[in-house]
Amino acid sequence: MKSKVRKISESKREIEVEVEIEEVQQELARVLSEYSRRAKIPGFRPGKAPPDIVKRMFYPEIKDSLINSLAPKVLNQELQAQKLEPVGAPVVNELHFKEGEPFRLTAQFDVWPEVVLPEYKNIEIKPKKISITAQDIDQYLEDLRLKAAQYVPIEGRGVVDGDYVVAEIKGKDTKTKKLFPTEKIVLIAGDAQNEKVINEKLIGLKQEETCDFIMTYDQDHQNKRLAGKTLEYTLKVMAIKERKIPEVSDDFAKDLGDYENLMDLKAKIREEVKTIKESEARRENAQEIVKSVSDRIHIELPESLVEQEYREVMKRLLSTLSQPDITKEEIERLKEEGRKKAEQNIKQHFILKKIATKEKLDVSDEEIQEELKLIAKANNLPLARVIDTFNKEGRWEDLRDTLGIKKTVDFLVENAIIK
Image (cartoon, rainbow, N blue to C red; front, side, top):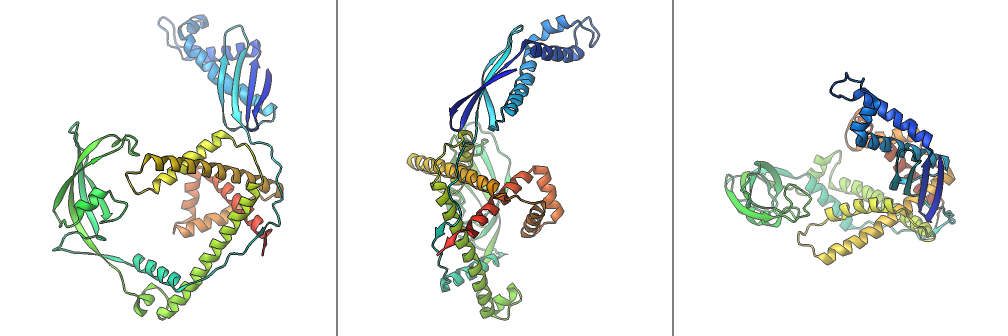
């Protein structure tokens, strides 16, 4: 087997592989033997048909099977022999197979570029000032009030903003007249996440009352079942519950836990706010340090990874949009912002991995176990269930990678000069 590697750019390579005729013939014989065993040909018992007849009848399939088995095998062998580690899957862009001739293929793949790390220790940053205001305490209290809110069933009046509404909704395609299944939905009246027309129609409706409205969905709507369709909906209110928010008082404090009075609760809140702000300050310090190192390195990033990260970034950005009538200009601005964010994410991740390797900041099995315990506690789940989820979803390497990045960031913060 012969191979030749060509450097297309700092982050892209091309490899040409040629397989000798003898090896191609051996692989062809193996594939033909498999087809001969399975082939059902009139006049012959299973597995007894002459190979030349099997080959003549199934040659296109045999050829495809040979290529599908031989191409990845020889490509992986040569990449390992050349000590090349592709980022993502190589893309075969040329392939030649003809009996009696060598098998040839050409593939391109991304690689991480070679980079020399700048000095990343003793980076000077200014300390972040932490202040806790009365407004911070009040906002925390307000959040506690909202979390403690209860929804009480009411009768005799229509829906108002803030009500918890249980409803049935059924739709009909205005073009095909196809009926969609009736669905039960739960929503908060007037909430910004609701469709605007639903908020408008819902207000004032009493239990058992209905309203009709029409909605037209864009061609690129995330729900493919609705994309490009216009539906006529009927919504029926099944139940209305009014939100009751408790007043801030000593009794409210006692209901929340082991607090003697409101003053005792506020003291605890001050400690919590301080911890949160200290954590935010540390995160900002970390971002500043990582950016400082990243800005001093200019590298060509693997395009396949940037594209993959770009899609994830855009999903997150678009999921935060509440307005349905976003303009084309705003979409283009988001795309530009998403591209820059994706490039920044990939670059910083790469740099942190390089630092982790250089400093030997490995993640131990004990550290992974401790993280799993924290995940279980935070989600109020048994540890065994969390472990089972990670096993089923194959998320162990992602967890190790995440902890490795966190460990590296902590290392940078600990070795920074804050003054």
